Amino acid sequence: MEGPALAPSLKNIAPQQEYLLQGSILDAHTDALLHRLRGLCDNAESSFETFNDYEAVYMLRNSSTTQQSQYVLFRVRHALDIPDAPDHIRYLGQAEMGDRTRPTLVRACLDVACSSNVREFLTEMGFRMDHDYVAKGIFFHKGRMKVLVYKIYRLIQPGSTDPKNLEQLGNSHLVELSVVAPLGQEQIGEDMKTFSEQLKPLVMLEKFDHRRLQ
Image (tube, rainbow, N blue to C red; front, side, top):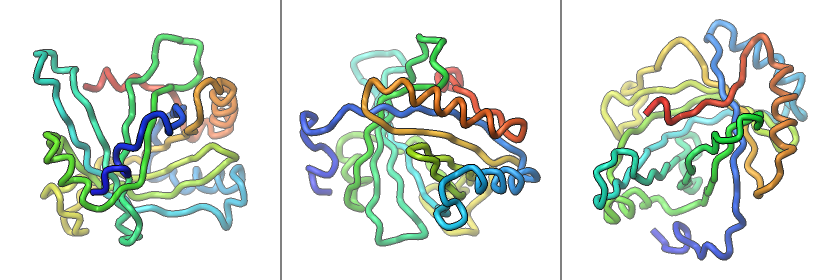
């Protein structure tokens, strides 16, 4: 992989934060949610898009400590429906849960395009694949907000994205409302909360402390 694609000078990268709300909806009610999103989002009849992505999560543990929480994660995503598109490597920081008045989860976010041998590069750096999966769904735009409605599929044989190797997880679709923006734009959270209210009672979008799931 080309070095600058993965590790450009941090001085040239504007600090970014991801504002995030999440929820789920039963498969049987997904069409009703999509219908509502088409009415709420920007030019939804022509601008919504489908995606079919393979994502592998790589972990590097801190060997200098015995605490299980000391590790670094990188997420590498490849578009299965657009084979020629570049892979993307993504870093997500720990969620900032201290301010309970914030309407959304907030975490540091860095996402860059990279060459297809990024997985080999991470392995040479000492990372090991923790898990992988396929995500299939639809996304919409509402201003700078992005809404994803998608299904997660487990890979029976890790690394193989053959459709026969996919097993869907559960009877629900995941729903995410997110914005990636520079630091200090707290009004985004209020806008997202207002938008999420329009999706009730079909789906309840909330901020989750992912550390409780670890």
